[in-house]
Amino acid sequence: MPLKLTLRPDEKVLIGTAVITNVGQKSEIVVQNTVPVLREKDIITEENATTLAKKLYYLILNMYVDPRNDKEYHKIYFKLVNELFNTFPDQRNLAMVMAMSQKILEGNHYQALKECRKLINFESEVLANVAE
Image (cartoon, rainbow, N blue to C red; front, side, top):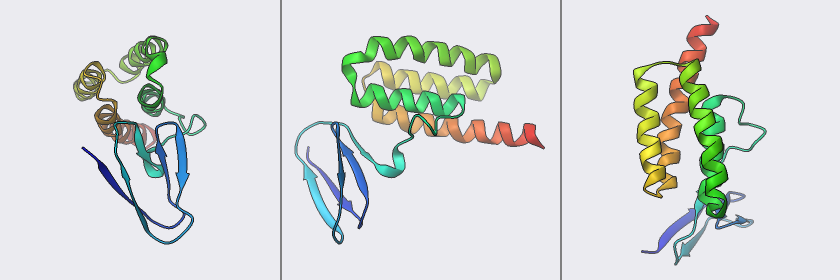
């Protein structure tokens, strides 16, 4: 099923392994085949992956765009998940990681990224409470 994207001026989108920038006015593109597609707002760079949840997000993003290296990414994923559980031993945390992991096992990395966003928000709340 084709995916129709509407890009604002200067908006970037990752399609497969290519970053595309809309240099004109609003434009529409249609992606005809199944490839990773992420808007700029949905991308976390390695430099911005400063917390455990953000590191997991960055790792899942790499699984999504570079499936050839899944085995290596999975090793790192389990180390980060273990570290996350040791840092935040919470049932909500466990539920979010389970949902995220299930999506990864299904090969649905885009949905795993959406689940990981919930984990990032939860982590932010926990860290904000600790800082107070």
